[in-house]
Amino acid sequence: MDFELSPEQKEIQALTRDFVQAEIAPHAAAWDREHCFPRELFARLAELGLMGVCIPEEYGGAGADFLSYVLVLEELSRGDAGVGVTVAVHTSAVTLPLLRFGTDEQRTRFVPPLARGEHLGAFALTEAEAGSDAGALRTRAEPDGDGWRITGAKQWITNGRYAGTFLLFARTDPDAAGARGVSAFILDAADVQVTRDEEKLGLNSSVTNDIVIEDAYVDHDRLLHERNRGFRVAMQTLDGGRIGIAAQAVGIAQAAFEVARDYAKERRAFGRRIGEFQAIQHKLANMSMEIDAARLLVYRAAWLKQAERPHAEAGAKAKLFASEMARRQTAEAIQILGGYGYTKEFPVERYYRDAKITEIYEGTSEIQRLVIARSILGLQEHVVATRI
Ligand code: CAA
Image (cartoon, rainbow, N blue to C red):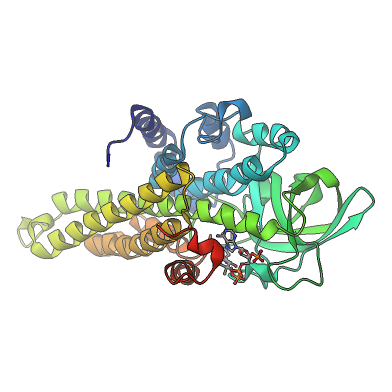
């Protein structure tokens, strides 16, 4: 067992950290306050190869491994979690499944513009009445001549307003129950109308949209993977995506820890620095320990995915623990800063608001527990194969 990052992984981590310190962290409070999506930033990230870190070079990416990508998400989220989720959805929820499930023609056509960051990707699975129960989706795709006609509405679509490529899930067999009869499609922005910008508790530098697809015609070559097998595409995509969200949670918690630790070393009360009080020391020790534990779960899951080994259970464990840890520990950071922590003078209240969503998207904590339980109890054939 080797806990050392490779020279390449360290280099990518350092490159991202430096960029975040210079170009992201100084603006994060303003982007949050003004609900500003920093559109031009993604061109800069693309120049550094960070919009396609784990995509092979022949497809326009940086050719690094999945752990490098996870390190990038952690660093981005340490500076601004909204930027983190934009890159996470773009990469692991759109570019990677196109690479994995696409035909040669689809890969060559759709992956390079995404990997080079020429446009953003959006993952359109969720609907108003199909969140945790993703298989209940009602968007329809009907055969029409040589292609498909798609009609429906999706909700909470990260990147929706700025995306050029949508990975969209629609029902292709109206008679099939639940998850069966769902297919995956590759849509362009022109096929989609953005109807609403969500107002959120946090992640204000990211966009979350309602979208409508009205009788959009797409050619047959926009079907990704096999007809009626799209739910597996969604599930396998989320198995990997959850590792990225777990990394995002670790990044947010790390940022909160650093502010709390530095504050404890400076702030004086009762004639001493508050870091000299055991109450504060215990909080900081717990924060540091839990961040470490979460990070190890995340790196292990990333390693399993990179090795093409089953990682659904490991990814669900990483996301479940890291997200709950981030919510808990960002609250502790506020507690250490006391009244200051509750104000916008310090960033910890933003970290707390941003951390909360990691317990909800890409599968709630309840869904992660379900995935883990099914795996450890051997309740489903495909999940048995994911045991670690
Ligand atoms: N890998 C491969 N196939 C899988 C799979 C996996 N991990 N999990 C399920 N499947 C397959 C099953 O084998 C089954 O296939 P068959 O029909 O061929 O037998 C099919 O998918 C249906 O599986 P289930 O019977 O398990 O489906 P279910 O309805 O009981 O439950 C669920 C599935 C795990 C609850 C699933 O609906 C789920 O993960 N829900 C959460 C949805 C979610 O995470 N949404 C996130 C939205 S995206 C987002 O948040 C992005 C963002 O903005 C950040």
